[in-house]
Image (cartoon, rainbow, N blue to C red):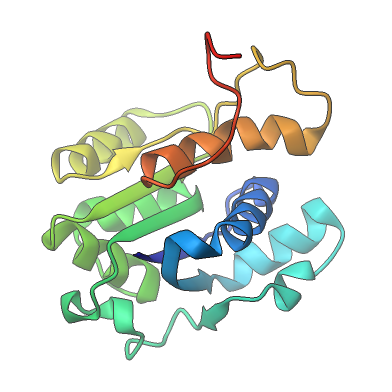
Length: 186
């Protein structure tokens, strides 16, 4: 059973966070703890992009970005997976620089120091050299950079299906057993 923390930052791409949380709620038998941290900016972006505040009704435990008593703020909390979706370049830069100035960056620092799985779903584009170097730094520290680049070979028909091509990949990276389109599969 996994202990998973999902962090949602203010980058564009709330559909990815929504899709991931919906899928994780359907995979309850594969995780023990599911915790969520949302920045204030992410709430505003969610409401702007998705036209709702449905994040408030999700059946998950929410933590404030200032709550350093959250179990995943320490390695002894035994959270084994952190997914930052979408991951802003500012958040990525703070992680790469070792700045633990909020719960998201502290939790990422903990995940990396404990050699656990950190998945950063970056959405910004294009990249400048600072972004590329920060991605390199986080990768060298053990994190996974997973750009929110949807695939089209499954012929998605809706925005949710298109977003799922990214979130299903993230769930695969997190080690969860999911049913999804597989290249060369039936």
